[in-house]
Each structure stands twice: as C-alpha cells, then as structure tokens.
Length: 215
Image (tube, rainbow, N blue to C red):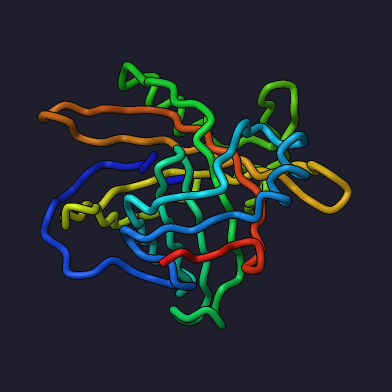
C-alpha cells in the first residue's frame, strides 16, 4: 500500500508477478505531464514525477471476487489498478496514482488497539486543513476498517503476504476531479519484533490515456 500494510507472514521465491495494461515488475511508465501540471496545485502532492520505475507489485484478492493490483514505484508512489470479474484490461474499474504522505509510529499495544478502533475509520478526516469524507460506509452507525491481505512481489524474486486495515476518503479537488485519502494501519514483524505504523496516502484518478507504458 498504498507502504505495505501488514503483518509479514511468509517469504518464498516467486515465479512471476501479476501484470496488467502492460505494467509489470521491473518495467516503467509515464504519467501525462500536462495532467500533472494542471492538477497538482489542487492536490496534497508536490513535485510528482512523470516517469516511474516499478520496483514491487502488490496483489489483493477481494471477497467480492475482484482484485487490486499495486505497482510500487521509485517516487514513493504506487499505481493502483482495481479489477472486477477478471484479470484483463476489460475488467478494470478504477486506476489511481497514490503518494505516501506520512507515516506515524504506533509504540504500544494500547495505541494499536485505539488506532484500529477509532483512528482509521471516522465520518470525515482532516489533513493539512482539507476535509475528506469517508467513502466506505456500512449499514448502521459504525463503519469498521476494511481488512485485506496483500501478496507483494519484489524485484529480487521474494514474495511476502501482509494484512491491512484500511479506510478510504475523498474530497473535491476541482470541479471535475476528486482527491482520495487512504488511512492504513500497518503491523509487521521485524527481527521477531512487532513494527506498527499508521500510514497516510493521498491519490487521484488516472485515465488509461494518461499513462504511457515504456516497457
């Protein structure tokens, strides 16, 4: 994610990372510089790169039968592609470019429990003076974080499986564009110790015409 959010469960050698739209591990792509130049003044991001190298690929299989693919780049960003009902370009329902905004360490079990209970999902979230409204609302008064597992493929051939607890928000950035906010609780094992963080990322919609695949 989107940093990867998660408890690392296992590491094994992989044969091939998922691919879509010509995006693949070790490849690269470019974002239309005109789109970035026009949109960036209205977003949280600053000095976003137009050229991205893909250094890792994440895959999330959703309970609905859909799938999320995340192409992590060298610019502290990831291109996220959401698919529904299949793995081809015809099944793509959403494409966003995300940038990591902030990472906060969670230092105790009490803080971790409080974060899961009340620090991820709330009706609105204010960041740098901008208010984002929650997108994923459940029936009733509570909308708990969405739990998912991501399998991440690295350039050296290793893979890892991680758990994530996330909530999505958005706000109007311009008359035609929205900016999205992802709040993620991360828990992973490092040298037999738990490493816990709250990861904040912001993103915006990307059309397939805005992407050039370099191969």
